[in-house]
Amino acid sequence: MSDNENTMTFEGLNLETCDGGWLIRSYDGEADELHIPAEVDGKPVVMIAAKAFEESNSLKSVEIPDSVTFIGNYAFWNCTGIERVRMGNGVRNLTLGTFMGCSSLVEAFLPESLETLGDGVFSKCASLPTQEIPQTVTALGDSCFRDCTAMTSIELPAAIKTVARNCFRGCTALSTVIMHGGIEYVGPRAFQECPSLESITFAERSIGTTMNAMRNYSLMCFVANEAIARGMLPFEEAKKLLNSESSRVRILAARAIASFPERFGEVPLKQKLTATLAEAGRTEELRAFEGVTGYFSKPALLKCIDAANAGGHTETAAYLLNLLAQLDGPAPTTGHRSSGLEL
Image 1 (cartoon, rainbow, N blue to C red):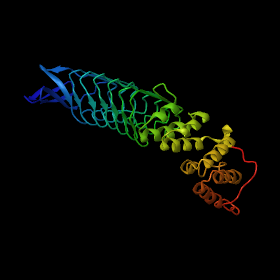
Image 2 (image 1 turned 180 degrees about the vertical axis):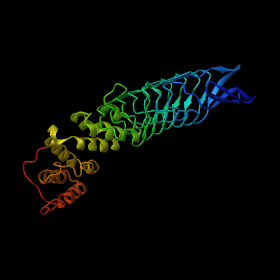
Image 3 (image 1 turned 30 degrees about the horizontal axis):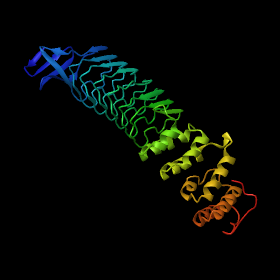
Image 4 (image 1 turned 45 degrees about the horizontal axis):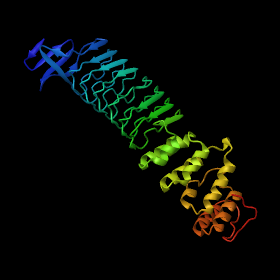
């Protein structure tokens, strides 16, 4: 039924003319399966307006034709009944919150025409177990998959360069992440509140090798804080990173080593390593160990002080003496030496 030459209602779709065809302004239907037509009354359907389908909870599946080239913000926001979405090859960018709150969504077919997934596109899609991302996508927006609590794995294709902040935050079941190729930036808290995360693979290389080759500090921090700190890097490989030419890599590796739990039996190795760092005057790396339980015990600190003094590193020795002074009991003088030190 046509209201005038610029508007039209077709099977619950409220249409209005726009450059080159129809814009879907809103939806009043109650269908459970919606196949958006590619053409109505001789004109193509080319755009979906912001919030056009918001809270259309009768919908269980949606098919979007190739003719659609733009989908507005929050277009399917809080459509809690949608289980499946199939999108045609016309859309290049998904904008803010496109499917946010689609809590029943289990499958979304995305086209190879896509280049970016914007902020919050799949946020709070609590039933989504994983998501295949087209090889053409170069960026994932802020909170793109935030609180997708059923997601167990994700694979990021080689074209992706940016993973924005909070991207996978709150994905509590996420256990496996595979990153290919050209990742250049991982934003703050991108994998925060992901307690099940067990495996992160970088382009089929070991984490240690990848980290040592990185030039982007945010990526180094990501690896240290999210991968190594979860015990994904073997202790011996982490030690090798302490010889990196990059001081940032060395410091992050030291923090990672400090995170290895005592139950793995590495405390004696850590103490020996600490003494080696002290002998080399590596104060910055030693600061990364500060406060680790069972790590800076009095005997270990005394050995470290001896090692620093033996190497002539008075600044490092002074730093360690200050730590020792914070423990119970009197601190020794800077000239303290013990016998039988083995590094």
